[in-house]
Image 1: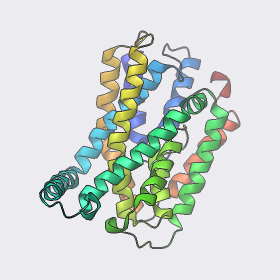
Image 2: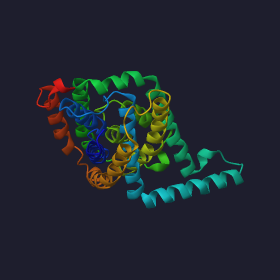
Image 3: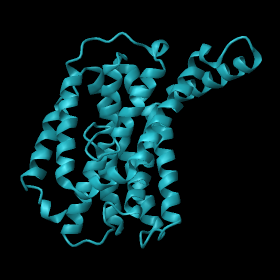
Image 4: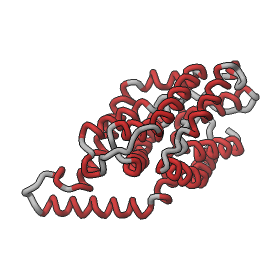
Length: 289
């Protein structure tokens, strides 16, 4: 993979990771287009290309840390404080402590995602090679975003998030492993459907991305190492994609938060439907996929 291609794909990932239009679908479409134009890079459904996709996803985790720095530091501090209190006071279960409970709920969401991802990994990866399926999932994401903005004011704050809500959000994140189903769009939508307030739906979704993407990258790295290796993809390309995604992702995350809090995510529905139509009707040449 040429470094300029890694740069381009990093920009795509950083721009679309947080904007709920499925960064993975855009990466797949761009990769197929580049291959169709005669450029050399691994097939989108190959182990090394999926690893590259995950590495640029890890880059956007840096964006989450930058934008939510103070919230993350406070969250970690509260978790450590709650853990210390729980260890000191044997009279209460871990669920009694708010931030320790939230941390455990996040881990449970990741567990649900992991079960779905590992169980259906082969099926999900087939989407990377089929643009028509991606067009369908893009359309569905647009419908969900449109519907989300029409939901009434919701009552559930952090203290009322329960095991069922965490499982529901974990399910959404597991389904979003399919290209075209936006991870942020799916998790925020499912959280809102469960009654979670918009602010906490967003923060839970983005915080949840940190352990989930790290775990997925570790699993894929093991598959690549035990297989054919990077198969010609350089560490430099991975590094360029990682850094670019991190820098571009900061601006994209700030934009989507501003729109989410104002219930304006439906503006992306039109873009998703146009993109799906472009793929479906050949304006983006399906023959290159």
